Length: 256
Image (cartoon, rainbow, N blue to C red; front, side):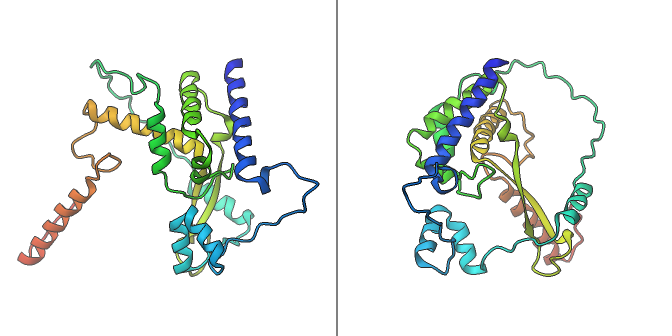
């Protein structure tokens, strides 16, 4: 138990050092001998700011150029909280226990995560919005030997069966479903932004589990979503073919 606590504290300290390096204006120590520097707001109206944003997050830059700045929700929290609490309240059905499988199968974690596995996830990760720690994938890629450090942390999490408590915290933001009647909470949808270090950890585990499912043919052949190969296109093609045939021959078609 004590080793898990010490490990979590060490990880939090390491993340804090990365924050001071990557986000000095927000997390770095105050330098008394230097004048206070204020960050310029990121705006696509300014060429230099737009270039900086594009290097870090190309999708966001293009979206803001084409659609403008994101819309912020002005509905008071006193109205939003009860609405989404009721809308997203967990309702658990009593499901019967699944049958146990008697086949001999190796564990998905039969070997530690490799630096190459984690490095691939870090390289391929799109620079989306940051979570509570404010660190994006761009920041982690900028840290020397970050893949080696992350691999060590992830393997310790698996060994100790423990993750730092801060990884369980997320930041919820609201996105508009449409541009009209934004005073109605029903026209907003919430998304939870987790820390990128935690998302890299789950990405690495999901990749291992996906390979394990493919190796032992765990998934049904009809399962197309959330697989290494995008089989949804196959389903879409079959459905479109059947619809086109029904229209051509003026037949009824029932799709379940």
